[in-house]
Length: 258
Length: 309
Image (cartoon, rainbow over all chains, first blue to last red; front, side):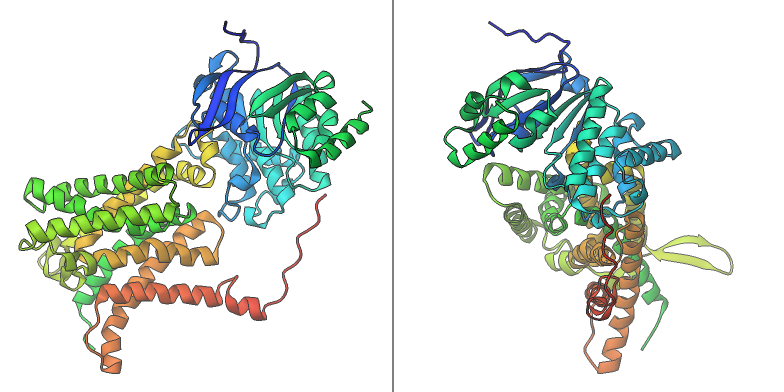
């Protein structure tokens, strides 16, 4: 019988399988992300976390299954979603400024052919202010540090003014100050009723950052509100025999006193 | 040294061609696929040959059509081989364009050898002969303005490239920088990719007869690469690569006349010298550019990046 995927869910994934060269990366993923959550997708390397985001956004082909945004295919709901890819996915030597990159977030509303004008530039500047690097607006992106680059990406997502934010490892290799700034920003979005879906790998911060959790290792091992989901048993199932990781797990669990 | 109006005509054709190539070349460079220009400019040969076989004429439209299709097929085949053959992209391009080029050579040798569509002309072009085929732009009793026929064909191609890139500037930029973002915003980066490939193919064909593929390959890659050594601002980058393109044409033609005269060498070819001149300009930028060798060795230390707040 087909599980329920009511349209009030920002993202519901049904029977999703993705394979590269006949090798499955995601297997029969079944998922509902409730509205207004700050949700983390956590799992070991190669668990298919990024692949899950990309498959939902039609960036890579699905072998089977579907992903629905508020009950409709992604194709019809593009406006509702902002996607922040992994920082390394683009060439930071590209000859554009921070402002140019952020303004790219306005292109969808602008449409084909039209040039960005003062409105778009102001929006971009404002977003850069919000992520704390307004003074770097005219800097070429090759001259930004890793943390600043991540903030540029985040600012670009902000100007997209979406209802759902798909973030792929926004905390990867950034400094502590940037990590703090990013999480505050995500919580702020969340407080304004936006749904945020975040691929994450640092178990130590999971329970502090996310109120909803998806544990993924090719399949969905568990998903639900973080307090019920972030348990030793589930983590062991997710990380399996990777014993070196169990120390991390123990440490993480101790942190939340479970 | 004999400086005549012919030299101006050669510079005009060479310069227009260099600019027409530098425009799509800039975006090839930014997408880190400059060699695609090389691949396409070789692979259009069978397209030309087949277009000739079908139509029986060397009419431009048939040639453009054949070349555009061959160009897109090169891009498509390379992508398929990369994806399904698990071969690295450069190798896939190599497989496709050498095969297509060889097929083109065979076709030309077998069928069209005696109807002045010959392989040497495709490689080296006939820049020196362009002034022989002049078109009168306007004529009064006292003055007459004539340009080579090739200048009009290539000028039209340049105009086409300017219009396409001007029209889709924002789309090309986003699709080159972050194809995933372009895709999620509904801007079809793959379509932009094939549009760029078509531009390269069409430019190659327009330039073929007059200047040959060597200069096309050089001008697709070297002027943008030179500009990239100097700036990281996209509009400046494009303007600079156009300037480098024109300078290469002028410098190339001047030295093709001056060098044999100065050193008692035998004749040199204009297109060969233009390609060499672009390489020379690259060398200059590499030595004296803002991040050049000289500055690196002798310049002051840069200010350190400011701390994060």
